[in-house]
Image 1 (cartoon, rainbow, N blue to C red):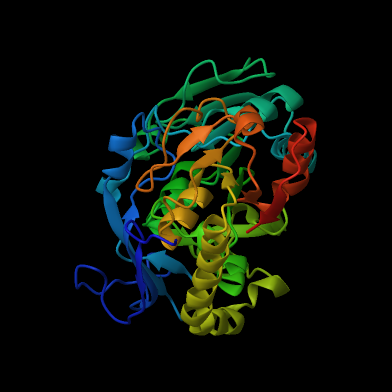
Image 2: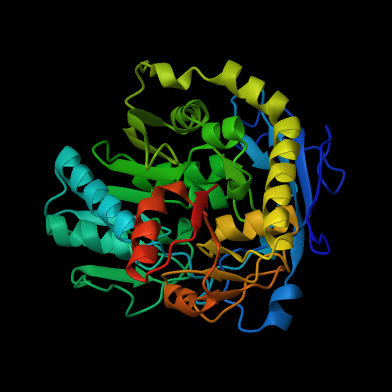
Length: 411
């Protein structure tokens, strides 16, 4: 049986945001955004640790209204309200317990160190999370690092010394403009910020007249989300969505010269490296010419979204109706978006996660308990839905090691 008691309401509209106000594009600030996708009744945070089922199902909810800017290609949740989000010590987002992710992280840090000569330098990281990447940059390049994040927690650098790094448990803002770095890093943070142009302008002002400072930003890649209708990557905290073209245009308008633009991690991440502009005209990479493609993806998104939601509801519902036991592997934002969008509660009893700091807690709204993978030995699922295809081989290996052979599929 497919229950829908906790499903998010999905629809489409054009014009003003959820409160009836028109919204100017936060990136280029030139025109109103056209809303092409809407969801209500979604949890306002996906990574908060919730200690009881009662707290989980009563968790605060908000609305998503994705608006598209036809001028710059930026996508924004025009219904976003910052006051509804929480970034604190109970925010648990790290992917660092995955072997696959850790290998990617180390390789990325090594490439940045080599490309920009980051040896004996001072690194500033905005939104450092639990500090793993900053510690890697410090350790591999003998650098000193300063990280800003209100969700940082002490003692969370397994396998890394943490030497040469210090952390400020606060949001980066103008009051920290005097904390200088030779290299400014900001990974998986800009998508959480609604006023993107204002934020990047603040970063540029803090750099001032130091032309050799390089900045590195990593964000989710939105072209894939729109083209493939990656519903698991649309959730409340992510209020800003970037394509190669929209991020390149934002950085240039903000006074930067784009040095390097790439997609990483099976095209899930978009990375940009830049430095203060010298004022001369800059060449534009071919991949930035994406407005026509983005317009097409946006136009087809509502129909594709509805079809994908219906297909997954049928698949999970059929499994549950036939007595099979499905579980999700991965309890982060993708899982929360998947479950709340589809309205799945009774059909999926558990989710599993290799992050020990998430185990024993509950997902917001739908309320599934998060188990350690070892619990599957007793539960013996028939279907394991891996939330990120990047981790499929790693998950299959872990299941094999436990003597389990369920059907494994990915989003």
